[in-house]
Length: 229
Image 1 (cartoon, rainbow, N blue to C red):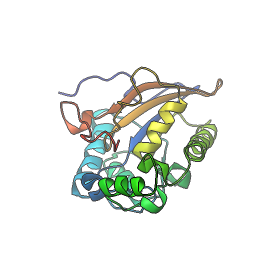
Image 2 (cartoon, one colour):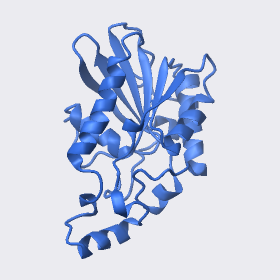
Image 3 (cartoon, rainbow, N blue to C red):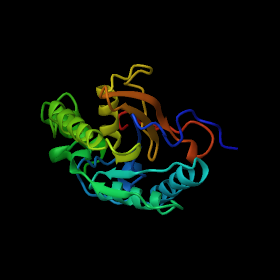
């Protein structure tokens, strides 16, 4: 039986915007520990099943009603959105694509296996493979600006989903000043859902739930390699 999860429901307060922040489903590159960044990769069979289970859980079990869905324009997010919304029994919400919701670009090491990227970084005098690609401050500005524009443009609705990437969601949690758990230990699993309530009048964000994987079954789902979150 599905456990009752606070805030995992349709918001009826007109002064509040509930944001269901979803990571895309699994890709072959995820399972092989290949750095994707802005590479336009597809869901694998596991990822498709994850997204379908999420849609069933959201719309059929939890009876969530979404007014709009905002998705990264990369295929793995678009495919997650499509598979999820195929389980929507009511009116299908409008979907808007936003390149600002993309994962952090990893530059020249995109497409490398993680182990190869670490070796490449060492050979080029870098402390970490994370020293390549989009600068952290540029990434933070891009993703937070995208979400700010989305929430400001949703004054007329109450429930939305944002489908994005693991690194993007972790960056947003830092921006939301989430401190309940150690940010270095937070895992954003494929198709996990993080719930944010945005108070429209105050323009404030409150984290209600992080990384829910209830739709994937009982137990805690984690990524075994903490270098890839």
